[in-house]
Image 1 (cartoon, each protein chain N blue to C red):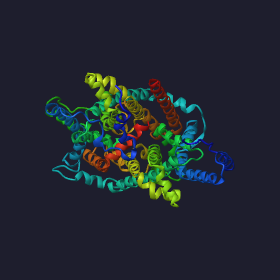
Image 2: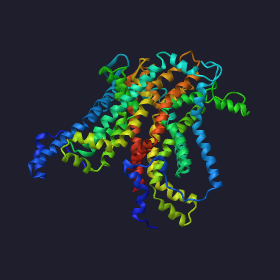
Image 3: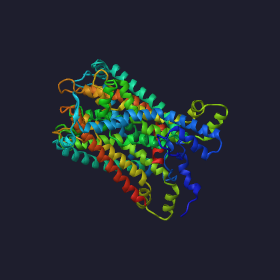
Image 4: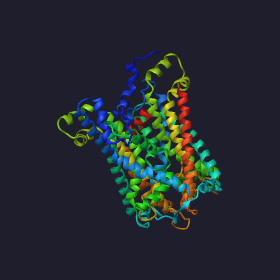
Length: 320
Length: 305
């Protein structure tokens, strides 16, 4: 497809190359003109990438190695102080442990439920379309909006769930959905599952659709039971979609922020502080140390890259 | 058992061409007909109950926002008292709505423009550094928001865009570029080359060919890109939280989140749920209208990824 050319090849060298490939001169000019046009059309993308991505990435590397506070700014290099301080923060290890726990629980529940939903609604027809839409509508809400909604749903003063349970006599006092570390974790998981189940259901549904119908037909004619068909045909053939969902879900959960910022504020007793919340609070709440926050965010980036590389290699290995 | 290539390809053909992806309604293999009656009834009851469970929180929020409740502006009877609280809150809900609308629209316009031109360049032209630029755009996905937002906070200050809704929209556009560029590239690649070549023979330049001939052909891709850009920009929370510190300039999600903490730990739940309704309503309506295009975004990703 695309011919890879070095980005800084001087224009003077391109006519000779074009001439060796195409003997006449006019097409050579045309090729050159199309190259210039292509570069022109791609220039807004390149500009955005440079200013808002490449420069920030370089800057965050520099900040992580500098004494850089929120209000005073750069006060010179201090590598590797920021990294040491970030790791020594008393919330560093608890945040990592909590983020990993949350990620594991969310990924398992979310993907299992999404797969179940996808299997239930895969038929065509009006009823399935209605049910699918119901599952999907929460995906249109922002995570912050959904968290605010559940904040009302969970608060003892306004919770309809608590009121209902009291009314049918299961409990005497209002339930505390966010009061204990365990309850806060599970309540947040419930919110995230509600918000994202339809999203992953759709992803898996697209994968299900890609499996040729003949394969199911063949299994049925061979007398395979429903469960056998699911285990030996659906699951293996759905692997690419499941892998993509897993990577997305793991990455998203490791970077969780909105839901905890709105619902728990990291509480009770800092038991639900995620790693991104720790980055945020290092930078903008109290410590006001951008250098240290940058160092921590580099650690997060590194961890994420390693994890994604491992997942990718694992999936590649499976395919061979 | 062997299958003919034609039969194998059949369920995929609809999805393979991004321009003709099926609507949500036709998604999924058709089960064999028959087996109606009790089994269907049982299944419908089950799936219906599940659907209600998913719809319940949103229905509750809508009902709670107009229902009477102590400690809110709506103490007896059904009414819009909680919405009046929003109107009176600090800069007023209209200001926050305007902030959100401005940022979302600017993000959508910028994303569409940049990805339309970029997708065209990647699909139809060869130029130095093409692959590097495309991979670089996708690499945005690999870096966490927080890692980019800390230097962007400093960088926007240097550019004179601190506390600016324009700066916010520029950053949100950058976050949209991986999906948007990818989507537009495959949309252009799905259009037969003969279409624009015919136009060029007729004397059109590449830009005229893009506007007159190709734009209508990639319209569906543009709608999908615009939809995702709008939902992302309207709903984004952490980006304005870090980049916007002037409380009258914050977008709606931040304003509603701030509203909770205003009076010494006493939270106005009525106003909060009213805020959720205002936040959710445009998203839900646009989503229901463009659901088909939302599904298309997934088909493209799954096919190529």
